[in-house]
Length: 157
Image (cartoon, rainbow, N blue to C red; front, side, top):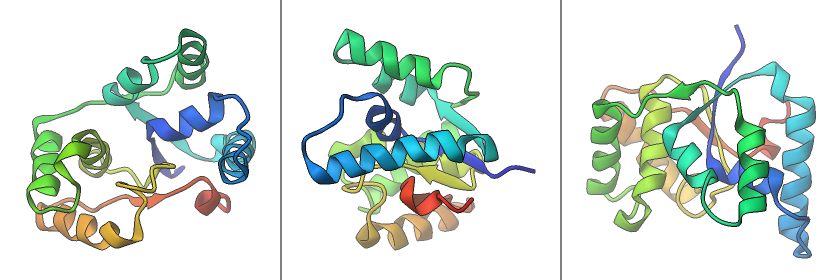
């Protein structure tokens, strides 16, 4: 059985965006393309309605590229349990209130039993400072948290 990966919107954005002149962003874009080309078939990828909404906003050309990239991936439901877990992540201050969508990404992945949550959101999701708290809150609520990581960290799958 293939590992289950929840694909957060930032990965799709890095994949579909114009090459950046910022060296770090450009390297992350290249890593994302490498992961997409070499690892995508080794996992089962899932998204949520939230990913569709986020990918569907902004510049029309970029939206089209993002939506084409994620077309066909199964949708995970945003259940009442996921909404409640997201509220707990915020209430327990693992995720700031202004990043409620990020809490919901984590919650959907945890409630749906994903093995990994793939993201480039280093501020509120793939953040070493908050990760232990997020994992603890997920477990306190009865869910095994996904491994939160970037495409670089998931290259050996």
